[in-house]
Amino acid sequence: MSGSNSSARDCAAQPAPEPLSFAVHSLPDPTAATRQRAGRWKMLLLLAICAAPVVASYFTFYVVKPRGSAYGELIVPTVELPADLPLTDLQGRPVAAASLHGQWLLALVQPGACDAACERRFYVQRQLREMLGKERDRVDKLWLIPDDAMPRPELLAALGQKGAEVTILRVPQARLAAWLRPADGKPLAEHFYVIDPLGRWMLRAPGDPDPKKLKGDLDKLLKASAGWDNAGR
Image 1: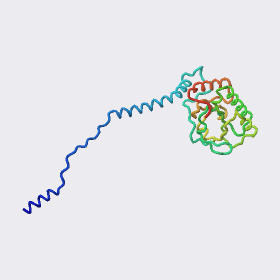
Image 2: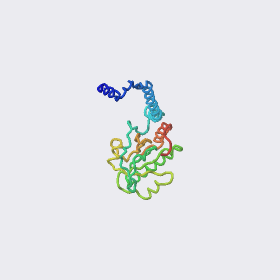
Image 3: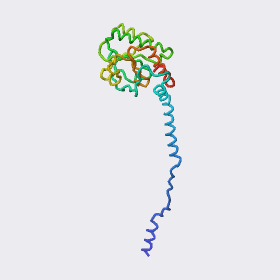
Image 4: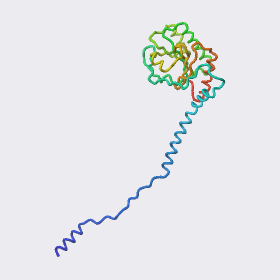
């Protein structure tokens, strides 16, 4: 009897077995992948819409070429402004290459000891910008100096006149020559260089150009980029 009682007590001490349960996991949402793909397509479409004006402007200028061919030499493909181009101002302070983005640039590469031929080019540079009329605020003038010579104070005063300022920066000759290149047999100083607002060098013109013909190139560029380029940085 004592054994029976002990067995009964042992059975009573055992916990009651838990009922069986079945975990139910949610099935994959069949619409999630579709929504993800739709999101990607929307993002790509947005990027395409943003890039379309730029692509169209370059297609117009390089392929369609409205109103005849260019007077200057088109650079195909365009050459990107190096992000690490070591630019400094006349006081030796570093200037970020990205600061040149945002405007069309009419650039000259001239020595610091600017002679009479050099000064004539700055006169043409100024006249070209003024000839653009209401579009001139979309174009900045740039002087790149590949040496350590200091320009004459009188020249600096002339180039710094309010409303007609020229951005003056120094850059090592070797680094500059890796970006801008002259025509065969010509030095860098014997050209005008046109750079777009995205920092792409895309046209080279003679250093002593026919102003009306070079203005025609600038007019075409500004018209082709009117849909995405605004005056001022």
